[in-house]
Image (cartoon, rainbow, N blue to C red; front, top):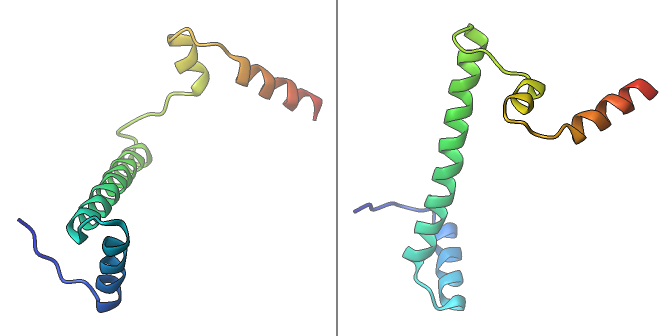
Length: 87
């Protein structure tokens, strides 16, 4: 169980949305939290990975290497290479 206090303007907006759609304020609050929580988790993971790369604890793998390891086509890379040669 979670109880939160919202600024009055947000509480009113939430109430209007719930009334117009026939859903509850709880439904929309839950949906907003779930969506934002996924974003926060992604950001946290990315920041930790960047920290590990910058400190030398983790190394990056070039895209070309990943594609070669997994037998992926190089259509995008080939196009990129051709465009670089033209310039």
